[in-house]
Amino acid sequence: MTKYILSNRPFREEFVQKMKDIDSDYHFVLEDDLNSKEDWQKVEITIGWQKNWKENLLYEGTPLKWVQSISAGVDYLPLDLFEQYGIKLSNTSGIHAQSIADHLLAILFMQNRGIFSAIQNQQHAKWALADNYAVMQDRRILIVGTGKIGQRLASYLDFFAAQPIGINTNGRKIDHFKETYSLDKLDEQANTADVVINILPLTDNTYHLYNTEFFKNMKETATYINVGRGASVDTKDLYQALRAKEIAYAAIDVFEEEPLPADHPLWNLENILITPHISGFTPHFQKKFMAIFLTNFTSFAKNEQLAENEVSLTFGY
Image 1: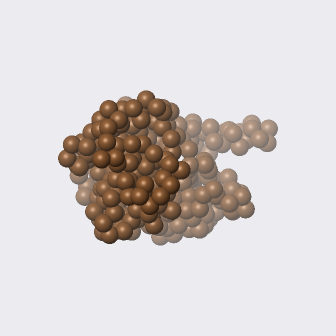
Image 2: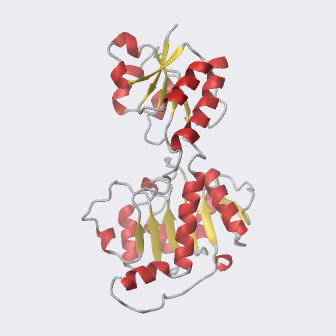
């Protein structure tokens, strides 16, 4: 019986062939290959998701059984409908861990050594020192989210003799973190942190988690970094906090609205680094993504179970 794996992007032939080797009943297709209602009724698996697929795939009795997300975050997907119709979901958690950890480490070192100040001064031919210099060991670095990305960053910081503090749902201990606390201790820990780094997924509990109240609670000398989800931060509140110097600096890679509009006032501030959602850019993405997908596909073809990275449709991660 012919069944389809529908993808929202092409993949190299070597990976398409590996799918055939695992189960020849499944055929890899793109949306343009589906020309009739009967074709859509053969789709049991999707790689990625498009909003316009909802009408053809989300209904009572759908043939769709599993969605493999291209991204780690899944807050943009119709999780309630997946749960309603019994559709499994897996993500790419871990695939971007090294890239994002490298991005964060670069920011920390550049700030510690006054590189951001030097770049600004160079634009004005100004020979001047930064306000302060630091070593990693002396900075209290709070990592909010101790998943694969947080753990990779903590291992880097551990190597450099720093002792990062972690925040997760229940305060469970994680390797390379000096201490870990539950999410309800976030404000208490942020109050003493030199750097707060958000790597949390977006859920109802983390929407606008970082707002006026949060930033007022931080040290005036502290830095806030976001590589998690844009909507975890109230952008207007972040702007006001930076403008009023309630916090010293921010490095933001993800925003509620992307691209960040050219007329947004954040562009005019000197105490922020804006990067265009690049922290997760990962060399050899297809190879790393397919390592996850093919492992799951092998398991799914045998017993319709997923071997790794299955997402809880209730919790969203």
